[in-house]
Length: 409
Image (cartoon, rainbow, N blue to C red):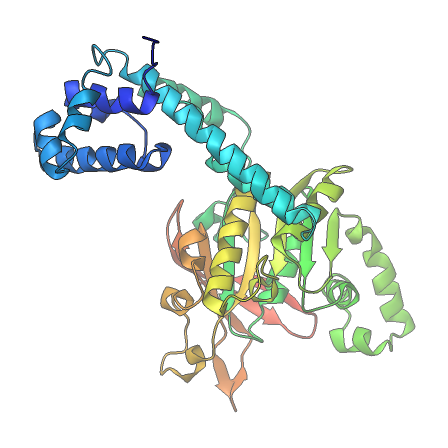
């Protein structure tokens, strides 16, 4: 008779039946198993372990009437449970290979109808989810030493233009997503543009604008830097003195700020633009105005699903590029109809997974003074801060020069 090699999946199940403590050291999931029976047995044994039920051929057979012979044969698949980790690695490797085959088939189907950036995004997401082997358990002392090295290295935090805001959030952290949310007209773009312009003194910054043209944005910056009325610049009616002020401000614009004003930008387009720009200079941050106008990679989804997908992709992109991403978000009109119109985190709940994905959520509010008009006071509330404390910062909005300055609280 010929020799029939034992399948790794059977060997893993057999090892657990011989010694149930093996289950505690495995990092396999049900999805790693290919055979339906193996998935069922592994799932059942995980539940039995959680419930404190003994695991052996007899107790497992009671859960699967008619399969007694098959289950008892699994115990003879391996002589001992000592090699359980080896068999588990084989199961994990086989699972990874199947995922690679599935990815290849998916790419073949999409190749003729999808843009290259979409295909690249599909590959990157799949690679992040691929694992080979069951993984190593890292000792605490090793992690401690790695953290010490990180702390000893120069800080990668990019300071915001505002000292009090830095006291709260520390600055913009690499790989983190910062959401700036408010109702229209409050000053989201003004705040974001001023941030981007200031950050560009420290290195490359990309500003993606889907609502205003690059010309309009630069006019705002000229007004703020040259202290020439925004209305005067908009109308193109500058006198000689104002032209001199603009000319003197020219040196302030020698910064690495890249503005992309193409409408309906997608995550893939942002990634592609970043790659192109980063060939010639280092990009330290990305600012997006605003999240709700971004294009979904898949059509036909409702607003909640669309924003959730974009929010998830933003977080993945920030981690992939290892730079901070600052994204603006427009709150719904229900905020204005409340007795207290100040926005809260609850106002993000109908906007997909933004609150969950964001590392920091900053809510902007400008109280009305009279006739429903907004005053010059702007309140920023750090409502969520994954790496620090919550708190508020008060700003003064100068509409004439399109500029925001920090005030004492």
